[in-house]
Amino acid sequence: MEYRALGRTGVKVSPLCLGCMMFGGRTSPEDSYAIIDRALAAGINFLDTANVYSRGRSEEVTGEALKRNGKRQSVVLATKVHGVMADDDPNMQGNSRRHMIEQCEASLRRLQTDYIDLYQIHRPQSDIPIDETLRALDDLIRAGKVRYIGTSTFEAWQVVESLWASKELGLNRFICEQPPYHILDRRIERGLIPMARTYGTALIPWSPLAGGLLTGKYTRNTPPPTDSRFADVENNPRLKARMVADVFDVIEGLQPLAAAKNCTLSQLALAWCVQQPGITSPIIGPRTMEQLEDNLGALPVTITDADRAAIDQLVPPGRMVSPFYEADFGPHQYRW
Image 1 (tube, helix red, strand yellow):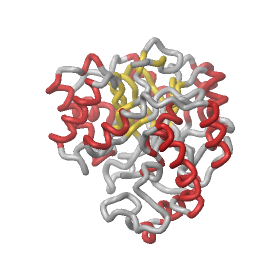
Image 2 (tube, one colour; image 1 turned 30 degrees about the vertical axis):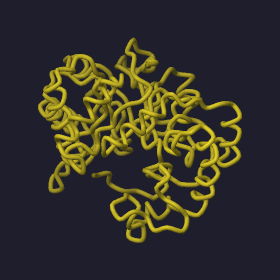
Image 3 (tube, rainbow, N blue to C red; image 1 turned 180 degrees about the vertical axis):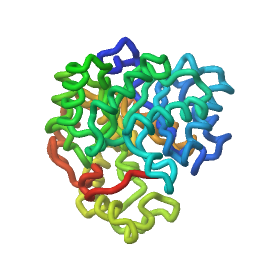
Image 4 (cartoon, helix red, strand yellow; image 1 turned 90 degrees about the vertical axis):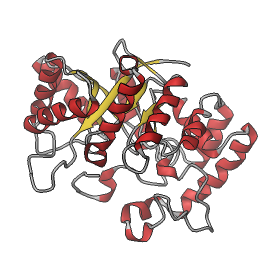
C-alpha cells in the first residue's frame, strides 16, 4: 500500500483513513472489532474517531479493539474535541482550555492509551480566541498526551489565522484539516486546497461518498432505503437540501464511468477523492464489513485525465450541487 506524509510531519498514513463514527452505535462492538482488524490487515494504519460519537462509545470500542489485537503502536490514532458532551453543562462543549484538557483526559481513558497521535478541533468557534485553543493544545503536546494537532471544517482563512498565531506565540501548529469533500461538493478547491498545498497542511476529507449519495443506493424515482441516512429527508432540512435533482444528474453521469472500469459507483467516487491533488487520506465510514470491502476496492481503481475531464463536466472544479458545510445551514450548536 502507498503511504503518504501527514502534512509537514515524519508520519506516514494510508491513503484511506478508517472512520470509527459508527462503532458502538449502529455497528455493534463485535462487528466493529472485526472491521478494524480487517482494515488493519489490508494496510490501513490511520483511524479517526471523536469524543462526541455516541457520547464516547465510539472511542471505547475503538480503544478496546486496539487492546484486543495489540496493534495500538502500529496505528495513527486520531480523535476530536468540541461537541456537546453534557446537555446541562455549558462548559462541556467548545474549544476552551477547560473543556479540551478535561476531554483529552476522558478520551485517553476511553481509548485505553497514554497518548493521542492526532487531536483535532472538531469545529471552529468564533467566540473563543484561537490563542486560548492553541495554548491548551500546546500544553497537551508538551505533556506527552498528544503528538500532533489538527482541525476539522475550518475555512482556509481560519487555518491561516491559526498558523500565524502559532508562529507569533511559538506554539505547535495545526498539521492537518478535515473538510467535507467529494464530487458533489468541490468548493475546497477554490481556497482550502491551494492554501494546504502552500503551507504543507494535510487534508483528510470527511464524507468522500457524500453521506452515501455517491454509493449508488439512491436513485431518482425510487424512495430511499428505510434504514438509510436519507430515508426521512422531509423532516431534516439539512438532508433535504443535499438530496436535490442535480445530484441524480451527476450520479447518472458517473455510472457509465464506473461501468467502464468494472467498479462500483462508490469505488469510482472514492478513488477520485484519493487521487485528487493535495488530498492526503479520505475518511471512510463503513457501518458493515461489506461496506468496508467495497471501500477497499477503490484503491486499485485508476482515475485518468479523461475521467477527471468527464467528472469536471458534471460538477466543475470548485463548484457544488449538494452542500456539506455547516455554514450553508446557518448557526447551530454542533452535536451528535
